[in-house]
Image 1 (cartoon, one colour):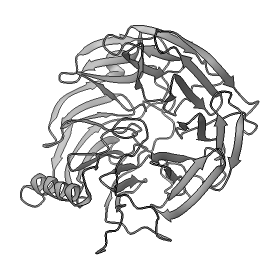
Image 2 (spheres, helix red, strand yellow):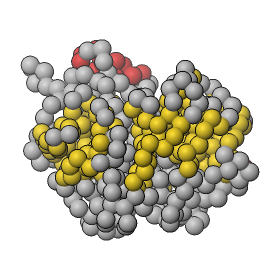
Image 3 (cartoon, helix red, strand yellow):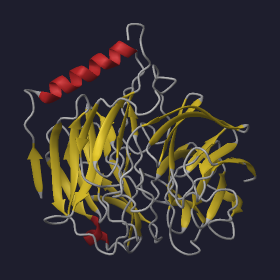
Image 4 (cartoon, one colour):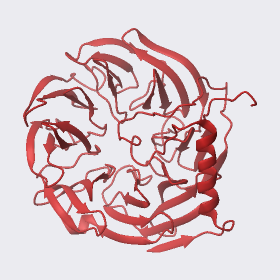
Length: 445
């Protein structure tokens, strides 16, 4: 285990935080970090104001870029810092956790640890985004290495090797679900033995607080919803959509969704009103309706096509859909952008212009007001509007080049979710991390 501090200007964090503060006040009061998977509220919504409404043709100007190794994990941003993980294979297999200055990309520190991949497909690197809570960074690696790191210094506060501690039945693509912070707990979805599919640890010490479920692990990140006037933890495992008490792991209800061929649930559950929607590549779509005033739930509808090319409703592989105003917008198995009626699963429309048609073709989507910002696997950033009337593209630019490290097909892909923070976008491929400004131009610009 090694921790590397890198030479940088005097008091680098002071200048980083001061710069972030100046940017914050120069553009108004509503600027946000992106401290975890899918944003501040873990819901894929970007709530900042002062954002550009159009993009330049061709390549968007890049503010800074830094070389990194391969990986699937998206960057996260907080406290004037950008955190991202990667993997290198020579001279030995190691995973790394990097911290860069948000202002200029200066490498502030790196933590690295030996991590041979065993029986893991798609070996580009770590999957789960780092979760930042106050000034502590929590990083979960592909083989179950969990670190709590002081993000200001790079010092390790505590660490666990969860594969050894919980005898994980390792999913074919490794551990992928981003850790969730809930009050004094860090909750991880790992598929451990003896009722440890979901495990909660004390976030300050790493000691176990509770464990729950005998299910297989999927790759889907857990979320918190409100049911019966309480916080409820929703976990889409390899066997069920499950609702737990996040304080103690008590199971409130489960709704089965066993895999037909293999566990391939990747998309995060999405919620609107009292409905939870999940979708996977082979097993299609499932809508669960939960009662708002009691701990009960029922399956509202289920839709599965005969195969991956002849699908019904939505068979998403990587992309997490949007559910809004009674409609679902998501990416099907070969990149078909679709709109569904959330009440019935009926398909309203399909469009193939947002991402090239390919098996597993992907778009990461983030809501921003009436617009949806879409990052497709070709490395393009798109501003669009999605409605029951169709896909309405407003602007499109190149953000970052696809690389072969994540998928050695079709000239490579961009599969890592970008971070939208402080009026910038931070994106990575298999070779670099880039920062691009997205602030609305002012009168003097």
